[in-house]
Amino acid sequence: MKVATLLLGVSAVWLAACDDPKPVAARVGVVLEIDGIEIRETELGELLGYVQASGDRLGKSFAARVVLDSHVLPLRVAQRALAAQRAELRAKAEALRRSVMDSGGADPQLRAKGAILGGEASRGLLSRGGMDLLQAAWCFPPENLGLVSPVLELPRGFCVMSVSDHQPGIELSGDLVNAYQVPFYTHGRREFEAWWAEQQKLLHDKLTYVNPDYVDALPPWLKR
Image (cartoon, rainbow, N blue to C red; front, side, top):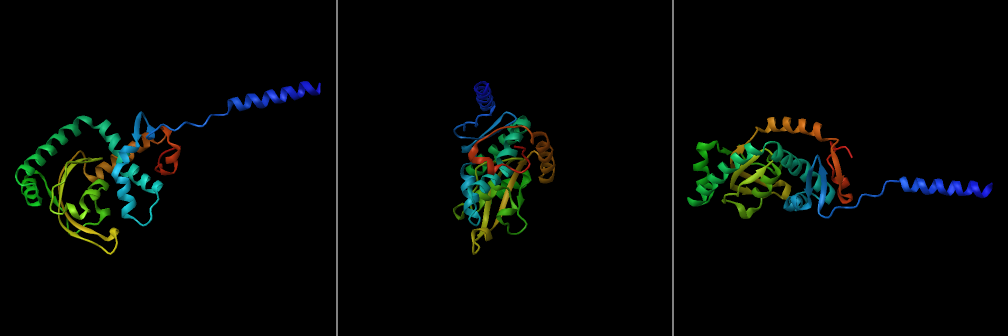
């Protein structure tokens, strides 16, 4: 009787072990997947290094969260939701940049040609926090002073930029620039923020995979 009871107990433990969920194997190069959109490590790219370099001893998880939350996730969702409109805007932005580069490819040429396309000069000097992450990553390296950016793809569209003044701070976070941009956006800033807030509500419970190395990098609005 005791033997039978013991065997039943062992069987129960064995069956319970079989029912335990197995750890999810890491998918090489994949950060996460949400609603069918796969985010790869290469998409964090140079922005990850930029965020880490521009702050005070920021860890990789915090920097990755900033890049995911402010750039990569809204960009990928917007690319899917607004594909036709974005393709049209990209073509216009690329046409402008070709024209500027053919005319000398510097800040004065962008300002002259951008004036009729809604070009915007910054209102005084801007800090890194005064612009989108990718814009700041291009504008603040001193070697870009006076040059014209490539077409920059942002969550809310595209832009072409130049910098006419760069004033370094005591620390990198104190740097300031005078920037100019020609925008090709799907939304104004506030309108896009409202649109993205609605998308977050729709996506918050649709995370289907997260790389174990990036669990701490998930934006707080995502349900694990």
